[in-house]
Amino acid sequence: MSDIQDVTAEVPARRQLRTKPFSLADRLFYGITKSASSISVILVAAILLFLLSQSFATFQTQGFDFITGSQWNNAKGHEVFQIGPMLWGSVLISILGIIGGVPMAIAAAYFIEFMAPKPIAKVATVLVDLLAAMPSIVIGLWGLYVLTPVVAHWGSLLYGLHHVSMGPVNFDIPIFAMSDGSVPSTFSGSPFIAGWIVAVMIVPIITSVTREIFSQMDRDLINSALALGGSRSSVFMRVILPTASGGVTGGVLLGLGRALGETVAIFYVLNLVSDINWFNILQSKGGSVASLVLQKFGEGTPNEIKALMAAGLVLFVLTLLVNWLAAVIVNRAQPWRKI
Amino acid sequence: MENIATSASHLRSEDVNVWFGERHVLKNVSLNFPSNQVTALIGPSGCGKSTFLRTLNRMHELIPSAGFAGKVLLDGHDIYDHDVDPVDVRLNIGMVFQKPNPFPTMSIRENVLSGLKLTGRRGYNAAELVETSLRRASIWNEVKDRLNDPALSLSGGQQQRLCIARSLAMDPEVLLMDEPCSALDPGSTRRIEETITELSDSMTIVIVTHNMQQAQRVSHQTAFFLAEDGNPGRVVEFGKTDDVFNSPIDPRTNDYVNGHFG
Image (cartoon, rainbow over all chains, first blue to last red; front, side):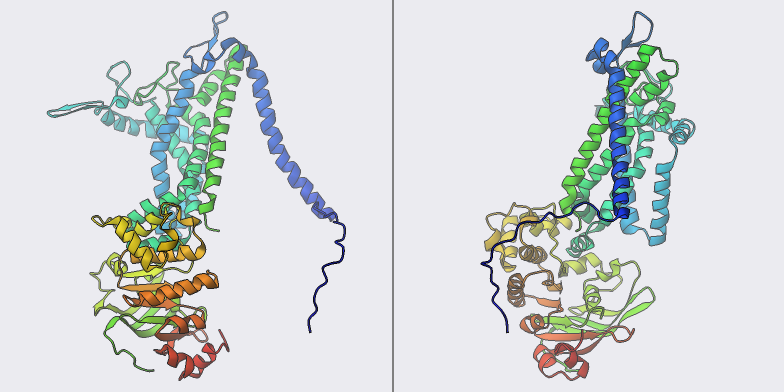
């Protein structure tokens, strides 16, 4: 026999619910995790404050030209500090790195996740992660002694395309030309080579992020595309890549964050020149904010060092923006992930 | 086992065996799937019925360790012949999966046309094909004013019918359904079952289901799969759905259809 519940009685007063941990061990654990996460926030804030205080003077004397101008002179009385070519150089080699690295990374992630037999996939994953752990200096030296001669050869081939004139076929590809129309003897020190170094350095990050996103995709989503008669390549282009695109973009931007801040490796292979190189990627002339800091810091005059701090601040803000963009894009990609 | 292959046999399996690595999971499954008939595959979890379904359109071979023996004949032609492209097999034998999984980046319309895009077809009347396919899947009236909305904006049941429409757009002769209603509410389940009944007028349907009532409502014939004590799965009993449920020959079939195990 059942009862009819009486709901006419007065509702009791609301009670305080405990949200903090109860036991000593839990409180201790809560404290440790809380302070650990606070430390990273405090550190970032402290670095930002330090850079702001150090670079204030430079922004005051140089004004907005600090970012847009192309001169650098540390002689007393004639001091001019402008990082325009370096800032654009960082962006240019990052773009080249992405063009070179992203297809490689996505292809590697696809192979590891969807095609490779398990043992090979495991080995490949470890090797790709190992590449991420490779010290920057090692990549720089490898870039200087091994990659530069190889890429210089590709460079000379591409240079041949800057002006093609074969009977009816006539076209120019300006990015392969030299800004001054000169005929280069060597292709070392160019943004093209630096771009390949950046590509090598961002491939592991993008590969592991992309692989993770591929592995989270619903297998039956891919299977239904195959069941509809899709080939591997059409399923990849029309289903896998579009579905994963948000997360992959996030991975690319994370890689870009590294590319922008990359210092030593670029320093070894790039000819830093304080004269803006907009798009002549084969010319032995380029820029990189981080490498500039490395190049000038050791023997910098006091004011020059402050200018380098300001350059660091600009780079910091740029990297922060890229990372923030990455977070936004990855978050937006969430609804498509497997639950 | 009762012989019910009276009408022209359309799809037929002959002694199908399946392995995953060294594990023998299906043994000598021989079934007939006559045209315009709905066949239900029932049995407890792990008996190999879904695996068997996937051998019928060669989805099975996408699993790296998979092994296969036997024949699957579509209109008398073995779909496992070495000169048969699995892509052609899948064009003739469509499949609907357990969870509704429309392509998330595509609109309702694009989902219906996705198979044609994936196979690089040209020269079809898109508007007409979208409407016929959605009508056959009994979802046209619900979506006709919002064909460009994202497919994920639909409810689960609608998404599943969209997936059916997506398969129908390729005009397959056979439709395989792997527990198509297990993730859906009773109302959506009923609508899909009505769709299955309507579709059986024009095609051959094989459906895996855990739901005894569903098997009785939609199917003409039923195969009961069972894997006992580490032995590979096999068909215990196969016959008209009425007979399998109301006068089973094997006591294990009787126990299963009456809910004594599984």
